[in-house]
Length: 76
Image 1 (tube, rainbow, N blue to C red):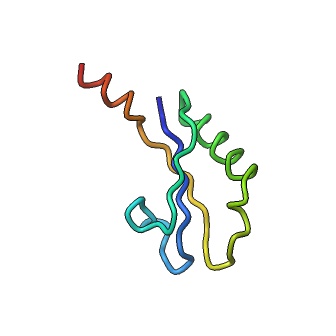
Image 2: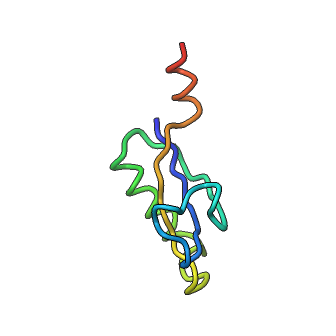
């Protein structure tokens, strides 16, 4: 399982440097079963919220991370 993570980053920050610890805001989205669904669900999540158009000085980055449940299952 993957976790959709949406990062709101400053336009002054490069895309590579936009991480959970440097983002202006971090939104945890739904869990999904694969990377393709992560991208689709992440885009749909952003489109259905007021995240888009907050400021011209910000951009949105969608990241797919292994969920905590998946990480715990790998330890077993």
